[in-house]
View 1 (tube, helix red, strand yellow):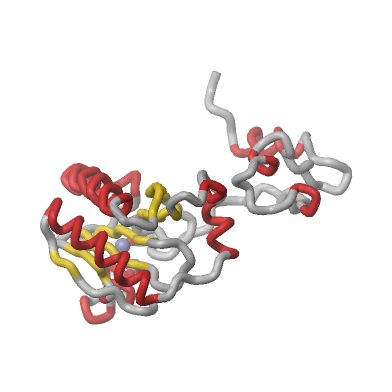
View 2 (view 1 turned 45 degrees about the vertical axis):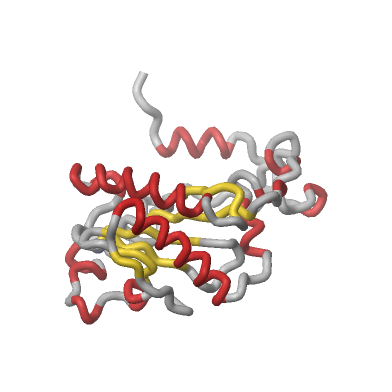
Length: 217
Ligand SMILES: [Zn+2]
């Protein structure tokens, strides 16, 4: 048996659509759980879109067009707002968001995505993931670190570390981002202190240089 095709995968979903082209809301699954942010009675699934002809190119899909191929003085502004860096990696903090901490780890010495990280960088990435995770969970207002890799927008690897607020059990699990989209922003000075706390712990664990988070990215 061969792995199935995109058409076969999509056709299975399409076979479950109602007359209006929508799936029913899975009320027995996560939409019915306490951690889901929306009331089930108010939910309606969007109609299923047709299968795309192909995957669209992302920003920096061609390494020559990626920000990392440009001259150092034309690199993106958010790289200047790092909270920690070494010669190969930069950790930046988003200071306009609603969680105690939202950090992004990016390789800066090599253009790669997760499936193409060179072996030496991959080994260091593993150590950094551990050290950043420990530093985030050391924050008093964080109950758990959550790690995400979304690769649909930019082709250059970026790993996200999200601090799930301590003792807010309703924010557990993958609906955290849905909650975060609806929560008030944490003041930037609070986010900066939290990010610099993480950076200091990280530097103590693995070395590198602590920087100062910038208000926008
Ligand atoms: Zn790149």
